[in-house]
Amino acid sequence: MSWSGFKKSVNRAGTTLLQKTGQIERTVDREFTDEEAKFKTFEKECQALQKDSKAYWDAMRAMTAAQTRIADTLETFYGAADRTSEGAMAGHAYKRSVDDLDGGFGRELDGPYRTTISEPLGKMCAYFPVVNEHIAKRNKKLLDYDSARSKVRKLIDKPSEDPTKLPKAQQEHDEAKEVFDILNDQLVAELPQLMDLRVPYFDPSFEAMIRMQSKFAEEGYEKLSGVQRYFADTIRDDYAAGQLDAQVEGVLQEMRELSICGAN
Image (tube, rainbow, N blue to C red; front, side, top):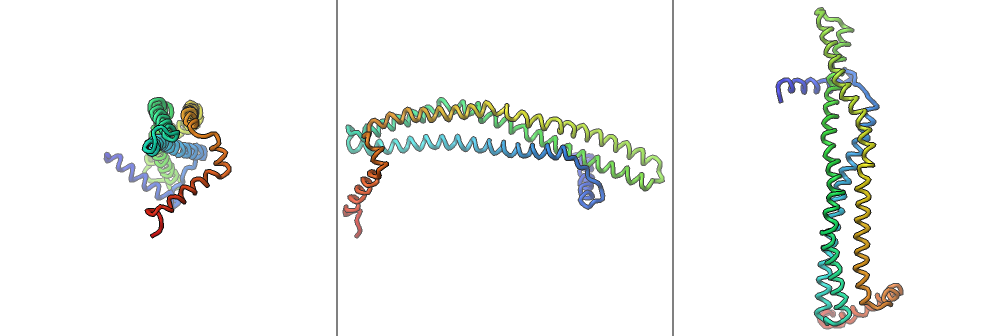
């Protein structure tokens, strides 16, 4: 930081302190404050959306990978007993189906998700530091303006013996006000425009996410429904009637009766 920049930082810190103690009047711009609050809310929501969209995609990847591992184990279980049984064929069909889903997920959906959702979110979030930099600059210039205005008022209320002080202070005031007004007017005009553009900007991403979720669900249903043909048509009714629970409990009871599983 240059010496001039350091002096400005010290002067602004002093102005802030004097404003807190009520010795210098603070400019209140409700229009800007409202627009800044809306922007901050949008920034927070957008960053959360970026984080959640990544978490969602990571969870989808983890789910398909876990499905594949489950299918590997089930195929091993059933195949070890009798490779020609309906269970073994069902296990193999399930393994083939989830392998197709996992491969299709990476091949057909990963790229489009990154292009239509992750990257647009990243580009939007990249604007926030730039906007915040403008807001910070505007706030610094506001401190300069408030300080200059305070000096002019003090010289008017208590004139100096040096007749050049008031014109000089007035010139500094006018320059500070001009710089502040330019930055403030720009933000007040453009922050609402940024907010208005957020919906049309995210419309394609929202539609793409719905389409990809639908595609994944449809393909999952189509592939996994083919596995059902290896099971008896009555299984669903048996489950609803609680009969499958009884079958499981029966098998567990047989396990308990084995000497290696029973109580000592």
